[in-house]
Image (cartoon, rainbow, N blue to C red):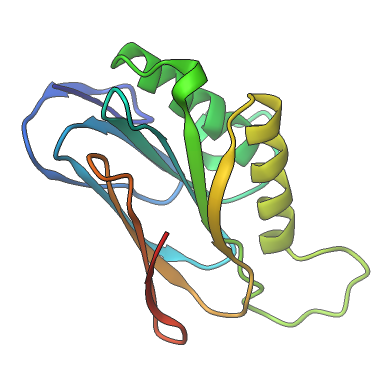
Length: 169
């Protein structure tokens, strides 16, 4: 199996656990588990093709790209890059589904503008919609951080937080 990350490194691996950093993404197949932590206002976007047993997880920080070369940093560029890497691994676009977590409002600010977390959630929904990828589950918002564990084989997204405990999407 090849594993693609946002740094376009490819390695052959078998059953394993892959850590996805901030402003990063990874793709795996079969028994791979993708994990990320430290989701505050950031969003974790899990995309999967259950029929081909291909899945990916992105940890995006900001809603829209501003010319930075790191596609994984921004929701609107991370999702298409993730999908492209998944297709190289055999995912079929029409089979793709997504789950979303994060997008918290971690700090109180007096501003007329929505929080970064809220804007990240909107950007994720809009980007998935533009790619015709149904969003089948989400755990977003609130004022607490989250850690994620995504099983490619089962497409279960385990969401853990200090405030809300553990849930599986």
